[in-house]
Length: 82
Picture 1 (cartoon, rainbow, N blue to C red):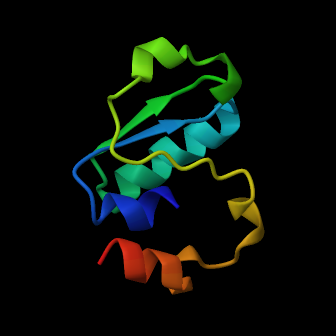
Picture 2: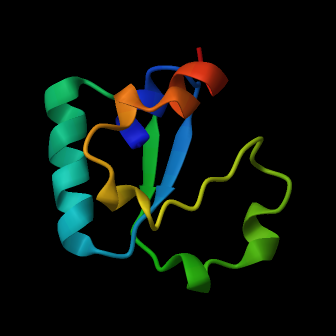
């Protein structure tokens, strides 16, 4: 979900606890020349809510998105972020 959104917004902060997922995300960002993503290698449940309160316009918790084959084909992205 990060890449389709990164093409449409100013900045993304991705919170990812898996070091392996972070490694692949960084590699894919470099290959795709995506530069507006900040990665927090932390567990979302351990992020201090006071540190992030009122800092974001939109927060998406995407635990279910790994089940989707192609997010760019999903209408929600086309509708909300076009």
